[in-house]
Image (cartoon, rainbow, N blue to C red; front, side, top):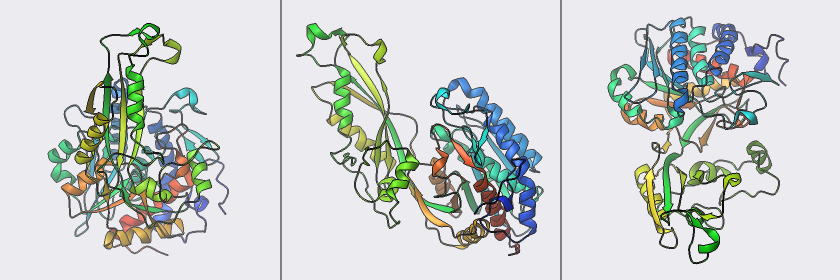
Length: 471
């Protein structure tokens, strides 16, 4: 049973643990760092750093400036803002390694998703609000909580961590990290490391830690269907003449078979040994309406982690209230395809493009173009000293063993860094949970889990640095 939260609203280790942790210098230091971390998380959430929206470019730069300021205050030896041509600002900071200690790269991102309509939120998306032990706001979980997890750990060590630390906080992850390869080339030596900790994933429950070992890839395209030179009267010409929006809809419907399985040939479809999810809990977490069926075949983990998923993300067409009785000459849509581990992003995009072109009806003209960047799927062999240290640290902080899990989402950064630094162990962690609603309305962070996540990462650095921890 969770203890009552302090009246101040500040999360403490004792208040968030299922069982009282034995006192240790690391635990005490983390507990002391949490109030300030909570306050600075709220400060970051108030900055609408939506890099994907050009109207918020200056906000994204303000966000990077704020993170850089926090890194300096946490004792970084050097802090710089870096960016590639046309890209968002990222923060790069260093804490030198003690003699003989490894260097750990701590990754997070400070850009956020659009709100999806401020009017749909229970409280304003950029005004952090606590309700029932959760902090609500865009970026509260994804991924400004990751940023503050790292900074809270560095504060707990008073700017002198037991390992070398490189903090890399990206500014365009929610846009697919298009300039990340250029940043890696330009700052290769400054980013070199032995272990990479990516705080941009989630746990299956607020009291169950996870190491994410597989992620799906991503390709996006825009398809435009054209049938007429100009709009024409739907009564005079409808019948022998079709309209582009209907042709587009028929094309998009070909993406799935009658069971909801992705019908694009040539894609990888994997399996999973993970235990089946409880369907009622899964439906509740997602917010499925009564009577709405799950689509696809296989277990829920297989469908969510190890199989492709296709979705139509947007359509350019007249609004219903603004429509008129004409046949539309052209229509277009954005199509997203998630890729199973083991697939290849370039080949998958070619397969999707070929499939869409082949299924446009009535001789309509079609143009399919790449949209945004691509992300390769990724899987991790979670064996070795760094992973053993992570399991010990998470078990200590959460009071339960870490589980290995997959994520249906994509983090382009992981595959890019794994290719650039093949000798580094990659640990994918995070402080989200199924109720966090990443990318959705009323995104939130469980504050108890945040405290446990900070403690786990602090213990991990101590373990990697060879420091014995009480308990």
